[in-house]
Amino acid sequence: MANPFIRSVAIIGLLFNLAITIGDAVYVLYATRGLGLDGALIGAVFTVGGIASVAGATLVRRTTARFGIGPSMVGSILLLTFAGLLVLAANGPPLAAAVFLGARGAMTGFAAAVFNVASSSAYQAAVPDRLLGRVSGAGGVLGLGLIPVAAVLGGWLGEHIGLWNTLAISVGCQFVAFLYVASSPLRGIRTTSDLAH
Image 1 (cartoon, one colour):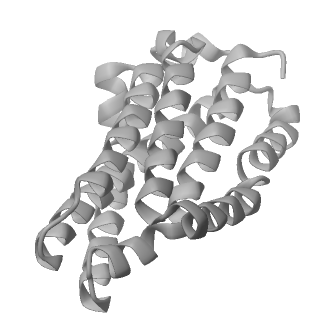
Image 2 (spheres, rainbow, N blue to C red):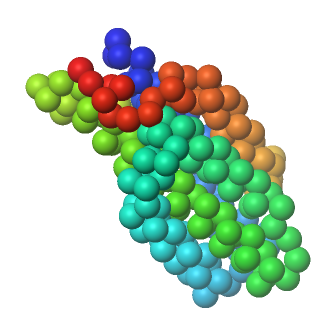
Image 3 (tube, rainbow, N blue to C red):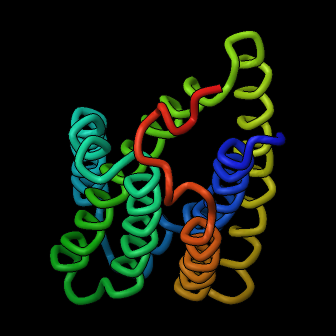
C-alpha cells in the first residue's frame, strides 16, 4: 500500500475496529447490568443509532462538500471517540441512562456512516480500477480480520477488570487512534480529484 491515503484508511480501520470492538463486547452487559436498561430501552437505543446511520449516509455529500473529504473523515472519527465518553458518563435511573446511550447511538451511527461512505468513495478515486478489488479486499481483511480477537479480549477484560473499566479502555484506545487520524494525510484531502490515480 504505497498510497499514503489508502495506507491511512487501512490503519484507521484496523485501529478503530479493534478499539471499538473491545467496548462493544461488553456494551449490552453494561447497559443491562450496570445501568439497568430493559429490552425495550435497549431496542430504543439501537433504533436511534439506526436512524442516525441513515441520516449520516444521506448527508455525506453535503458534509464532504462543505468540509472536504479528509476533514469530514477526521471529524467523524472524533465524533465516534466523543460518543464513547457518553457511555462512561451514563448514570441515574434507566431512562436517564438510556438518553446518554441514545445520544451515543446517534453520534456513532451518523459518524460511522459518514466515515464509511466517504472512505469508500475516496478509495474508488484513489485506486486504479484494475486494483480496486484487491486493495479493498486487503483493507477489509486488515480492518475486520482482528475483530474476533478484540471481542475475546473485550470479554476477558470485562470479566477481569469490570465492564466500566473495559469501556474506558476502549474509549482510551479510540482517542489514541484518533491522534493517528489527526496527524495522517487524510486531513488535507478536499475532493476526490486530490486522490486521482
